[in-house]
Image (tube, rainbow over all chains, first blue to last red):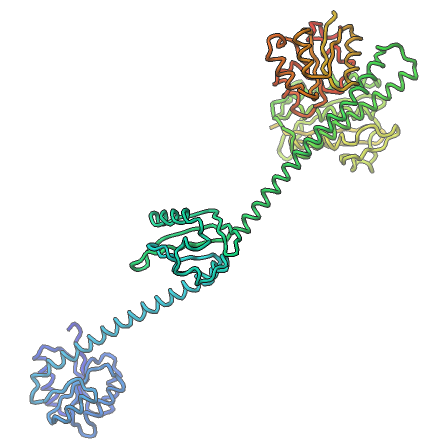
Length: 508
Length: 127
């Protein structure tokens, strides 16, 4: 025994108490004896939790063994209690055992005491162990019940269909309410039947081969499987199966998610996309046809006006020449309107391909000047370039850059009656960035303050004394093109004195 | 220099313009409004230059180009597309198909002479 045994010893005779203690020691039982004589002492000592055994004399003055036994049973039912008495008769002995005594030992027979104590303690130990085992078993059982309950709740309330199949026979063991509702079969129609007997899995060959694969691999998954419900409706499902052991038997759990709605949405989206693509193609075709159909008659108009003005068929009088020139410029105006509209349509549909390449600004400006100088000089205007000697290099789409500068220069010439149009090249700093600045400066009519904010809007042509000549798209288009090549157009204008349009493009 | 120029063009007004311009410049204009006939004329008459519209009834300008350029009798004759298809990329597409040049409609009659001159061995500038 590892810890000394604490014995509550009810005994009025000190000699007997001594004798009993010595007997126990002699028999190898090391014990702390707590001797008590009265009921009060007895009750008080019982409260000591470390007491492991009671030895009780049977006959005490004012207190007796039977009463002590009753008190002990009531307060510490687990404590073994051995009656030790000199005056116990057989009947009393039996009576005491009936009242719950563990054993009884006669004082003149104390050689039995050690054995009796040992047996009582081992009984207590055995009871304690049995109680522990029973409690552990109860806990396991409770845990199992909790787990079953949780599983059941999940199974019953899951928003996915769940099917449990016996992996050996293929018979359906269980099916959850969600699947029953999804497939419109009753539980009875499903449970205990083989998987392939159910209409849902009516492709028997496929069901059997899937089942065989599942048995072999333990896992199977279908992203998109059509299942037919009892009502003949087709449901698109995501089907995931696992097989695992439950005790001795292997089961297959199938999780079935109805993705019909998702599939339907996806399908709608695909159709909408195709529609959109077709609409886009139709628009592109329409634009191409439109361009073709408008250009064809213009070919004859501009062409024959040209031959007449070239006087190929013969001389013209002054009125004829003037009127034909008007036809020619109107036709060209119509052509530029068509071109601008097509350009705009291309920009709006993101169809403009931008090819960045190293561009020397001086080169582009020279080209633009060469193309437009005759037009300016035809009106008696100077067309000048002011540029630094060192090359101003940027990365830009040369064609787009050129188109912007042609638009701006054309406008400048159009709205200037005397003086000059000048292109100035330079650099500017803005937010730590070095920008190339290409300014188109004119000494023309300028723009009224109230008209300035409408300047970059489509079809917002500012009225001038000589009517409206442009398409109303030029600046709108130029600004869009500038943004396409990561630049922007600014302007300053003083009515009556002239305007400056400035294209700014990052140099890096 | 007088050249023989074949015009394949289905639009009557455009065809009339081309014939008038070519003849005014002193050239001889052969013409047809049909692609297949154009190929036949090209192979039998061997003009100095072919101006070909692209949208034609029957076989179109693309097919005319393919057939002319794949035949030894006609592959060396300069072929210029004359078209109202003037969307971005049209020019590059046609040059890639084998056309030697591309003129978009409406043409500019004042520049027309200079545009065809290189194909007739005439120095560009003044004819």
